[in-house]
Image 1: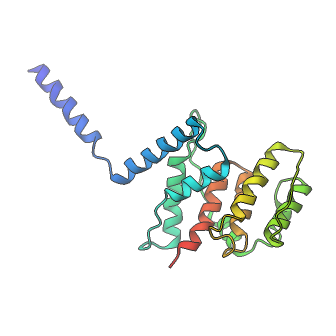
Image 2: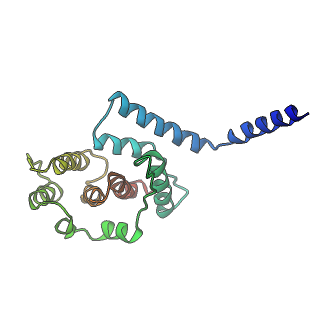
Image 3: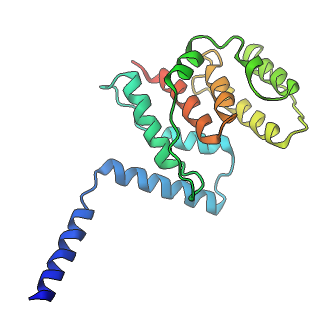
Length: 193
């Protein structure tokens, strides 16, 4: 009788663990796919990772923009796992997002990057110049390469007056996940019908 009871408990636990929504399974498979692609070296740039995260998010037209931003935040945190020991949930601060959407004219000057980096960013965003950049800091070089790709990928930055590019630079001051969160939230503006 005891064995029968234990078997019944094990079966019910197994059945209850299978009761996941399709969205959870989809997100988990996207995350596994993203990690598998990184491991296999199928893509390794921050730009490609950003595009993968965005393309795997489903914008829901029956929800308003803010609800979609909140869903996107959850999607990014499920998809981009930080350091496994930390595994911190990173949020979009709505005040910062509003500032990035509405008024970004002087924000480049306020970013925490080198003067040369800011000059290159200004040229990309406001003068639409493709610049041959060579920065001393490898982190800034990598970021500038990503920003150049974001600005020139024909995925809506022209409609957003460079705000997505600036949002990525803004978020990247704190973490790559923050860069994806803010730039992605800005890009969602292009999906509003």
